[in-house]
Length: 84
Image (cartoon, rainbow, N blue to C red; front, side):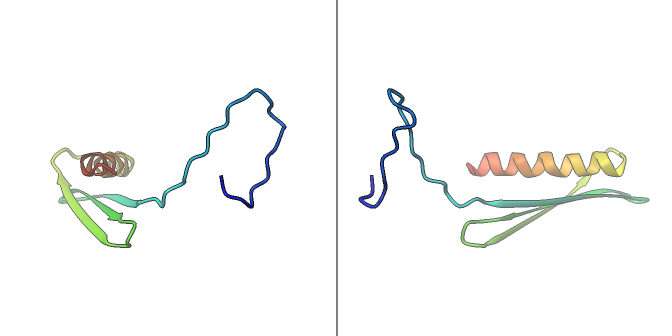
């Protein structure tokens, strides 16, 4: 514990855990439906502000809302596979 922190007795007999909050990756996503098909894009931004763009064409026609959800799901799957 750093020397400049004060102890607080509000929770006697309780264990308190401290953890560091790490900087977060960012994910941006968008889905669009056009006459010629459905497209989605995902952009991941790393801690060092590196930009990783991805784009996909979906084979099933859907509404704009479904395309947006598919973009979100793809973004999360990419992040999981990258171990983010």
